[in-house]
Length: 265
Image (cartoon, rainbow, N blue to C red; front, side, top):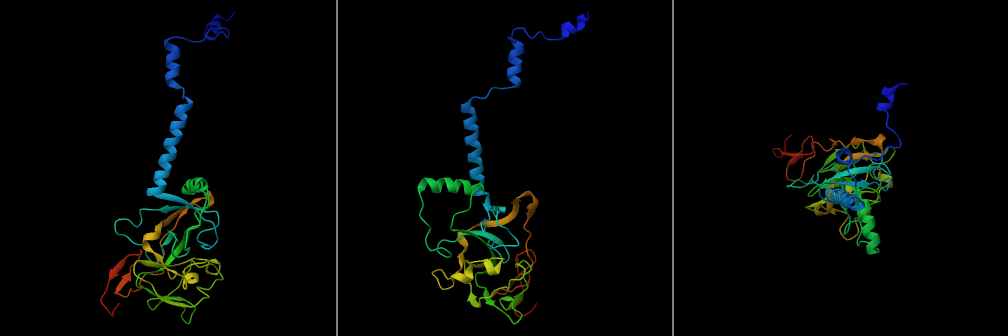
């Protein structure tokens, strides 16, 4: 008989462990009460909502107005710190903004409870954004003279024609002519899918004139986070490099502005 095996195997009828050994097992595997689980869940949700409100907010793309850059169903991350500390949106930036007063004259009314739940879901990218939230590309900033179009069909910004490779294949830069000087502290914005985008062009004759106040910008779209096959960063476009502002500044590579002498360069 193998007596060693008998000593090493545990008898199934043995009483449960008690004393120091059981306390040691409990220390390794703590028992969570339902109250602890609820508290942990509340803390996690609170942290996510705070980050979404102040730092980075997921945003579900609800339409094809920004194709091919952004597709329907993409979940992007909006950098809410991009325009803090004196920074402002620049030509070429893809931004999310509140269109109340420019694209939408009044925010639609909804049930407070439904609105709260929808807002919480939208804040983490699980639901479509509010009807007043839009995502577009900045084409002109305050003081810019934006015209459609030159003889080649291109949009001009301050007299300089711009080639826009991000525009949806087959679309014209704009089939609607316009000629506007963008008021200070506002933006002229357009979708990349120009034939499928209601943007500044469509609101020219309405209160607000189609331009978006800078203070209404939520943040800059930095990354595509979902679906996995679309993971990527939105790199800055350089198509506006060299566009001179009315004050004589030139948008430098990377989107900043550098001062040059008037009438030269």
